[in-house]
Picture (cartoon, one colour):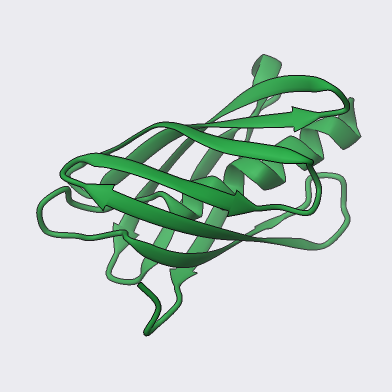
Length: 133
């Protein structure tokens, strides 16, 4: 279970970093993001590449996470400088939804990924790749 939570956390953090728009009208999160968080299982730092698209207050995107076979972003939205979305991950044949929330500051983002089953949350940080849209 701890390993599962670690992998789910990694995916959720990656999505959160990638999908965290600051202000719906002031910030455009469209582009490629590199998200980082500490593996809760003690395996070091995890990096997730998120490619996001924003239209108004709606955020969609894709994630590249080696720890899980599938991960999707759901219900992505921006409210002011806050981004929130669900990160749905397939782990060992079972789907889990992680809640992701973060705050944008220019090309940087930081926030928390809520783990399933009341297992707590993990902080993440991320940066938008320059020149990539």
